[in-house]
Image 1 (cartoon, rainbow, N blue to C red):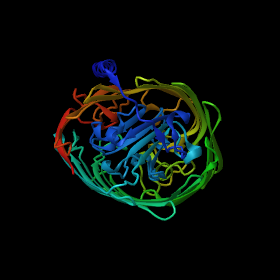
Image 2 (spheres, rainbow, N blue to C red; image 1 turned 180 degrees about the vertical axis):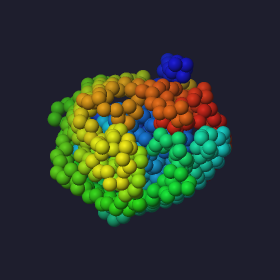
Image 3 (cartoon, helix red, strand yellow; image 1 turned 90 degrees about the vertical axis):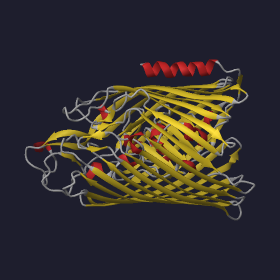
Length: 634
C-alpha cells in the first residue's frame, strides 16, 4: 500500500501541475493487418514506441513489459531468466507473440515464449492487443497478442548509428550491448549483440544465476516496382538455474540451457490499390534440462516453420479494406523424454474493415482452420467502434482456440520408473472459448486518454495439470504404482470476468520539461464448473496495477515504474518459497545526457523498498539492487 500511495501521488502531481499541453501522436496499428487508427478498431490496444521501451527501468524485455498496463508477467528469475505473459486471467499459453507479423510461439512449451530474439535497440515499436484475435492470427491468440516490430522506413538521407552500452550492478549484474545501424534511401542494415549475466538470489545450495547472449542481423531493401524485401536472423543463448521452475521437490537442483535460432523474411508490395505480403519464419530450439547434476538430462529439439501469404485490397472505397490470406505451419520435436512427433496446421482467413456510417467503424473476421489435432474449425470475430467527438464506444465478440503443446501432450512420455511429477496426455482436446468485451475510451484535449473495458471469457476444455492417483492414470506403462502425478487434463468449463482501466497522458510542464505517464488497474475472477484443484486457475493475479511515470528534460530523464499484484497464495513445504499472496515493487531510473545526448550516464534502482516476494513457487526474486552504466550513441 505504501508503494501504491507513492505512485498514485506522483501521477496526480504529474497530471495537475503542467502548464502547457501537447498533442499525443496519432496512433496507427498493424496488429489487425489493416493499419488503422487506434480508436477505429474496437479493441483495447497499447502502443509502445522505441523511446518508451528505452526509458522504462528494467534489465530485460520481460522486466520492461511487466510495467505495461494490463499485462501480468509471472517471473521465475531476474534479467530474462524465464517469464510467462498472462492477459485477463488466462494462461501463459494463451498469448500469441509476433515478430514483424510472424508467429513465434515455441511448440515445446509456452514457458519459452518470453525468449523473444530481438535486441532492444532494434525494436521500433511494440503493439499489445488485449483480448481474443484468433480469427486474425490463428491459435494461441486467446488472451492477447504481443507484436514486436523491428522494421523501419527508408530514410531520404544516408544515416549511420553506433550504439554501445555497459552496465554493472548488484547480484553480479553485468550487461553489454553493441549495435550498428546503416540507413540509405533503398537499404537498411542492422547488426546487434547483447550479453547479460547476473548471479541472482542465494537459493538452496546454489544461486539463481542467469547467462544470456543474443545476436541479431537484419537487412531491408527496396526492390523494383514498389516491392520491398526484409530478412532477419537471430541467435539466442541462455543458461540459468531452474531450481523449482517446474517441480516442488526439495531434491530439485535443476539447471537449464536453451539455445535457439530464428530466421525470417518478408516480401511486400505496397501500392494505392492493393498490398501483397509473403511472410516466412523458422525457429530451431534445443533445450537441455537437468533435474540433478548426476542425472540424465532431458534433451528436446524442436523446429517450426510458418508461412503467411496475404493480400490487402484497398479499392472498395476510401473507408474500406479487405484482407485475405493463408497461413501454414509445421512443428516437430525430437526428444529423449517426449519422443518424436510432428504437427501441421493451416488456416484461411478474411478480414473486412469498413465505415458504413459517420463515426461507425466495423471489422468482421472469419477464419477456417485445419489442425492435425482438432481437425476443422471455424473462427469468427466481430468488432465495432463508434467515435463521437472525443468519446469512443467499442465492443468485440470472438471465438478463441488453443491446442496443447508438446509438453502438455508428451511430458515424461518415454522415461521409465516415473514416481511423481507432470505427465503429458496425448488425448487432450483443444481449448475453445467465446470472448466478449465492451469498452469506452475518452480522448481528451488535455491530452489524457482513459480506456475502460469489461470482458468475459467462457472457455471449454481448459488444459491444466491436475493431481491424479496412479489408479486413475490413463497410461501407466512407465509409472510407479502408488504414485501421485500431475496429469494434463481438460477442465470442463471456466468462466472469466473482469474489468480494465487504463489511463495515460503526456504534458509539457516547461519549455524543456515533458511528463509522460500511464497507469492501469485490472480486476479478474475465474471460476470452474467443478471443484478440481488446478495449477493455472490458482496462479493468475486477481488484482494487478501497473504504472510508469517519465520526466524528460533536455538534460536527462527520471523514470519511475510501479507494480502491485494480488492473487491466491500457493504453498508446498517449509523449504520451498511460497508464491506471494500480494506484493508491490517500485523501480526507478535516472539518466544524465552528455555531449548533445551522444552519451548517457544512468543509475537504476530495482525493487527500491526491498520487498521479498516470489512470482512462482520456489522462484525467489531479488530484493533491492542497484546498477549503473553508460551508453554511447554515435
